[in-house]
Image (cartoon, rainbow, N blue to C red; front, side, top):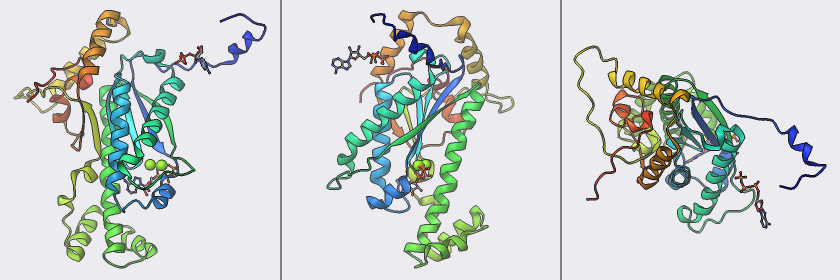
Length: 298
Ligand code: ATP
Ligand code: ATP
Ligand code: MG
Ligand code: MG
């Protein structure tokens, strides 16, 4: 770029690198989706079209950004996880956050008509905010994702009961809210079953568990351990992570090779438990970031 007397203004830009060797989570959330869901007549409590659209946009983001290891979504939010060793955009916070937010938003708007046929979008257009959070250990990252999945369960049980009281029980919103005030999970299960013959356990997994987007590699048989169930897989993972820290970065060619393998993998959306050890033990590529084996086409 040519030098000019104006060039100095660049010095006003603030550097914003995120810490090295930490998990990066970019969480996006729809702006004013309570209102937006009313405007486009989302079915309550769960509009399947809206969830499928969120998932399709998230899968496209993962395809465009091979550095994303896993994404988890519920309602109008999605969390995108970048590996500790990720060096995309030199880990600059605003580059990472704004790229995820705008890529997601573009796909959301682009794919809208495939999921909401004959429901044209009109201003104000859907938009999303975003933030980045750093998590220093694998344990912290797993707790973060567990927090989101537990939140999904709690909210879904509440919303399912709340809307059953309204749609099937004929209550008003205020009355239903009052009815649920101070109730525990067991009370809500009981209300659903005794009044509406709904067994919450039989509700679709997509609503109860949220959506997990990952690259599809062959599952690994978890190692059998005879000792305490202190997940030996995790301990191994921690040490291999340390090896891949700042002191032992992969060579550029190795990085490129792995990126290509990641790009080749199919992206899947699943509605499964990500809290238990089993999910992580069977998918060691998530914590290690070493791409797994591509399953053979059947
Ligand atoms: P903010 O801008 O602060 O995020 P918001 O209105 O988006 O405000 P959230 O707390 O993010 O509020 O909640 C999202 C809302 O979007 C939910 O309350 C719910 O009403 C609606 N919503 C999102 N996804 C769906 C869906 N698949 N089906 C039905 N409603 C949905
Ligand atoms: P980064 O992803 O780091 O932002 P970049 O390739 O987008 O990389 P910028 O520094 O943002 O780089 O520069 C934008 C570049 O886009 C310009 O150098 C110019 O070549 C090109 N460009 C932008 N607008 C136009 C336009 N209207 N016509 C032709 N070229 C354009
Ligand atoms: Mg929102
Ligand atoms: Mg939200």
